[in-house]
Image 1 (cartoon, helix red, strand yellow):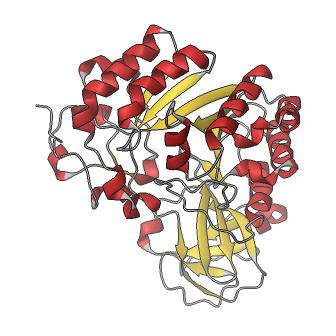
Image 2: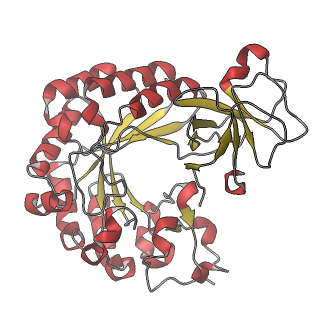
Amino acid sequence: MLKLYGKIDFKNIAFKGWKLFYVTFNPNIPDILKSQFAFIVDNHNYKKGFGSYLSFEKVKKDIPNLFTLKNEFQYLSEGDVIRLDDNGGYACIFRLSSRYNTLLLTEQCNHYCLMCSQPPKKQDDSWLLDQSMKIIEMIPKNTESMGFSGGEPTLYGEGFVNLLRRTKLTLPNTGLDVLTNGRAFAQESFTKSIADVAHPNCTFGIPLYSHDPVRHNYVVQAENAFDETIKGILNLKAYNQRVEIRVVIHKQTIDHLIETCRYITKNLIFVDHVALMGLEITGFTRANLDKLWVDPYEYKNILSEAVRILNHYNISTSVYNHQLCTVNNDVLPNYQKSISDWKNEFVGECDGCQKKSECGGFFSSSIKYRYSDNIKAFA
């Protein structure tokens, strides 16, 4: 697991607040551009003029804006984008080599999901939106895809629309995945403002946890959530927006999974994709684990039936966040390696497995809490 943020040692900081920098190992950056870069420095290669300096060793020179990194941050590569704070805060915001770059827009949310991996906070964090506005200007134009997540990004209202508009203009060829609970789109005027942006390749990933409104509302811990989510999906599709329905499978949703998929085929057959997702044991999931945990191996036949139903109606379907040894063979055409590289690991039982390179593995955050009792290496 890669550590993407933390506190690090610092000295001689000359800027206030936070700043974004490109990472570079190149001492020959043109002087006019140096202020945009954090130069990886040691005791022998110091060059004046860079916006900040990063080091993996104690540097004797009296260098301005110097941050000392631990070896766990050695993954940094040329062209990555990092945030440095005047109090020693560090975050790797964009990794040039990764396919899994997602910008966190807010930790505020109008849901309180039982298994939320990013527990909501009430304080104003609109600086994250400001950061995202700046970051998209720094991302290479040939970036294939990226994501926006929260909390709930649409709580920004027109601010979110402006970010989407700027992303379209700045990164016109970059596919965009937005994770949202979809309720804001129940307002047709807001949906229209999104559609008017006319982003050429944007998908809204919206959770639907049950065909039963009471069950869905219980999982997300919010009244009227089901009705507004369904209306939001309908509005988005009425305005020709791409929609992915996301179903996280756990003890509160597994008994409804087949009926939920049937509901989708009868009422939402026009959605662009359905993702059936394994549980990540982090955030609120840890506190609610007894309410949520079910061994994926125990529901593999239910998962097969759910996939069969969706496939029968030609709905594009993927199975995410599962291990190959916990699913039936008939699911394999829909199986995806989906866990982001920075939080993906394997357990000891996987040693020597002949299918390890094809398997999605585990969330690093989940391994020490719970995983299937039926993990085995394929010979």
